[in-house]
Length: 581
Image 1 (cartoon, rainbow, N blue to C red):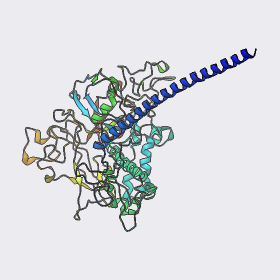
Image 2: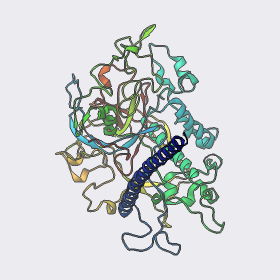
Image 3: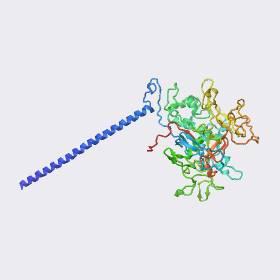
């Protein structure tokens, strides 16, 4: 028994020793594998960091300065002298209520239906640079903010400011009709909260242009205050009729902004001794934004079409009649089957369908964003309200002369320089009398005065030879067979467009009258602007983005509104593009 017990003990010890050996062997193998994997991980991490370094070096070679000038080899941002490049600019900031419309090529004026067979739409290929555009039309609430700012800073109770506020007001009488009742719209559409997010109407092209200028200054103030170049709440506490902010003035002569009160310029980022001038943001900083403006006709049509959803590599796979896909104006989705995809007039006497089953959900205009956006993320590019664009109207598009960022309406100006060699800053409001007798403020205090280009500015230039280019290659005197240099008059277009003349107005007396000449044969002149897109009063024919009409720039209706655009600086795309292949 004793020997058997001893043998069992030995066997047990052997089994323990063997199992221990096997466990150690597996452990060692596991550790060896771990070391191998660790080496692999180290190699991967090392390669990753090398790649990062290579990429950063590659980027710094062309996109950054790395502290050394690529031109001279000097130190940049050195404490003692040298060139200073202290901005952290990465990409242009997307303005509020706007989306990026990536530029591209398209066929402008390509209408699906043209029963009139006029020469108003001749298809031509154009290229558009990238730009930003409002997602929606400017609403009543957005425009009321503008009116409120004018009322606070240029009180209409003061006679010298009365025309500033009154002539910025939308014309609410556009709702009236000789055989229709609309007094509640006259009294409520602009100001009642029920219509707050409806598109503003009753604004002329000139009023829309002035709103865009005002919006540029207010947004720039916000950016400068946020970045610490202005004192806190400067945009509200430091502004009045004698102390205003203008984007151009800030860039050219910043000490003249806010009525010359340089203390407003001493924000948290620019605090210096009182004896030293405050530092200001220049264009090199990337903080100065492009101005808001009305989109050009080419931009608007391109944005409305939204051809990106029809793209296959570098080709468009089909034609689009409307901003949405398909040849029909009604949706095929089950949840709202048969409803209209835009707000427009279906037929005579049918503006919104029958009671209880509305086709488009609106009798007149509708709340912005009530219908689906197009492929660019833009709402109401067909229907609701037609929209002003920047162009002066002409029946022809001269694509033979230019097919890039096409625009007719250039009247080039330059800043006026005073006797002291500095830009001339307006100290008083400057008004202009329109052909309809209204007096509008053209220049507000604090803005830089402008003047026409001189001969020395255009001498030997090949792109343009005068300031006024609205009627270039368009039947103006100099391009007609009856041209006589001795009779040349700037801006004369009567050879081709024999339209009534309402320009003979005496601003001091405001006396004006209609042109009684019955031989005038057209309404086209240099003061009519293009408007695009159908409206709540239009039939589906006008929903085609390529359709175009015109209206006097100083008049307003109940079916034309507007939205703003802004140029994009830098690369065409936002840098978020995914690899296609």
